[in-house]
Length: 106
Ligand code: 5GP
Ligand code: ZN
Image (cartoon, rainbow, N blue to C red; front, side, top):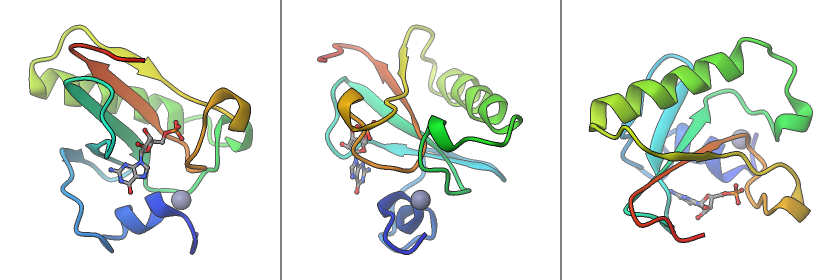
């Protein structure tokens, strides 16, 4: 999607470092961290939010990526958040899972 910031990050437009990536999912640091570790787990495919999700395999891939990246980083205790819709605090309309660990400030 042309005007989507996460699609631009995924396409490499901003040279963002990926903490982890696989065929379907990328993981990068949140620009405005709310914890010592604050990562965003993002599908390469543009899906605006959970409300638009129609791929039943995708959430499994995202959650398995959460498990893999936290294991790789040695993080065993963490919070996951998915904001859906403006009123719930979603500001980027490309589906993503937040991973927060250590000194979580919400
Ligand atoms: P939301 O509120 O939509 O669930 O979360 C969007 C998150 O994306 C926010 O925590 C925000 O700090 C982060 N974010 C917004 N723009 C960028 C960006 O250009 N780069 C990175 N790394 N994170 C971003
Ligand atoms: Zn997008």
